[in-house]
Length: 466
Image: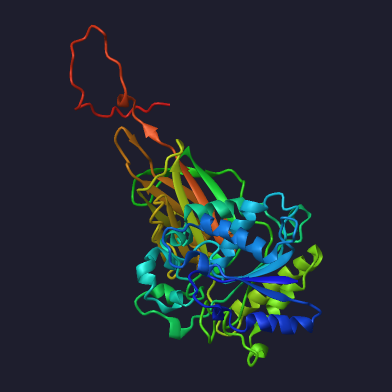
């Protein structure tokens, strides 16, 4: 089995892999796996170049594969791949560009992603200059500005990849393709940056959130309708309507690795395993378990076993908090982005923003390049204890008056419905479509025989056009 290793961004030396390639090759033989490690050094393609985009690297990656693993017939020989961090999205982008959706001739078999930023990283919004001063980021994945744009939570290209990926199932098109995600949620105190709390964020490995790594995610679209609802605090909203069409990703093997952080020699999921400590580093055996899978039945069984192990890991001694992300996008029914708005989470019988339980909220972050998107990071277990089992959110967009404007919108649900939308350690994409209201005084005709007159002081009539 050809086994390609793809590291994160701007790594200057192949020691970033540590002893893992050789450990897998040696220990794989004991399981009857003949592994031939091949390094794919993406760092040499970008090298801190702020002009290089993700699609540039994907094209170079395809060429690198043909050069290293060409089958002599113009194609690529079958191979499996182990990625770290941003390397996971790179290979996924390559797969979608060159082989999906048909997948019939896809040469990639096992895609084992270690701590992948599949839905981005909260650190990316800080910018490369600030990230260069953070140890945890600098040891393995400091990218240029264009790659940072991809990695920022709620980015357009990451969103596009994940929307396209929704229908991609293991063994799609009769291929041997299987995705696996392994990530940690341990913080290495030596890599913690006291200036930025994201490097010590609960539910993350110091760089990537568990929820942002996991390829289990859902997509929900809500349309603002005509039904009215009184808002707590006064005023009236129009309810957001759910059409019952929740889109969910295909089942994917996912596991939280005990005592694994994003990077570093001591706890790093990629670099810390050595010949001396391999027996105490479960990631080695877990990767070999993934590489041993070759059938749909075995893949499903492994995914189930990993889910059970993850549950046990999070429910064990010192029970870990579990989190999820909601990535909101707000547009209007004319297809325009709505960049100026507030999101208020609501709970209780009256859908009150003050009724959510203490500790539910962890973080929110707007996307710098796409202001219509904002990501909320929430405590899953606290959210499942909402008062009266009722949960919702309110969107207050601007302009909220004048010749063209938006009314407040509210989504109202119950905990059971919310539980159907999200699971712990996952991401939910919520697309909200507001109605754009236009006053009939925005455009008018006067009588042809009337006297000329100015109309700069015309005011809205309050009557709306259809």
